[in-house]
Image (cartoon, rainbow, N blue to C red; front, side):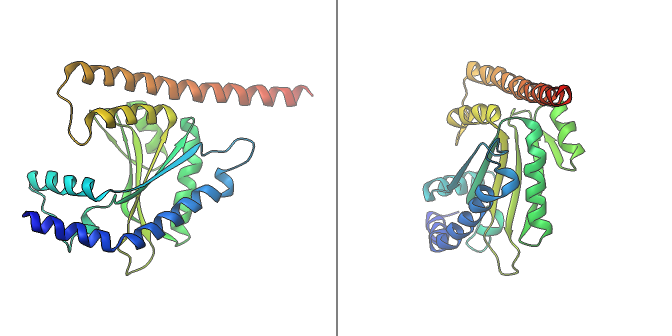
Length: 230
């Protein structure tokens, strides 16, 4: 791929940014305002992050795909690169994911969004794999230790070219992800020590998520017992 072709592709993206900004805003509003996920006493969603891919990062991604033999053109940009905008949903413990998934699935079944790609859970943990598969989500074990659930959505419109990647993960998983991203993106570290330390951190994050689930189950059992006693 020539430099001029990359510039042309980035210009195509820049010319469509308004449409991407609009869709990103609508996705954020849905998650910020959806009542079942934002109860005042104890909301399911802890926090949201959003981003629009920077043109420089897009350029780097195009160059890396070109090296890997995957050629992107101006005509295929929006069908091949589906994470130009993204929303990340953070929650405290794994059980809360069920309600987040239900909200997304309902938005699709109501006809507002469609899945551009099949939802997929990425994890290194066999126990998490079982959890997600019970919810009907295709799950892939990753040796990289990356953990997140990915949805790629777009407006339910035959003319729609805008897609948005939604990532869902716990706060513990987010800590690991942010550190890994700082070390390994866009180019992976060659440090053996860093790789081993990230592996240990992934196991600590998984343990933390499980402990959080246990704490909240214990708290719910305590509250139920108190009501029974009264």
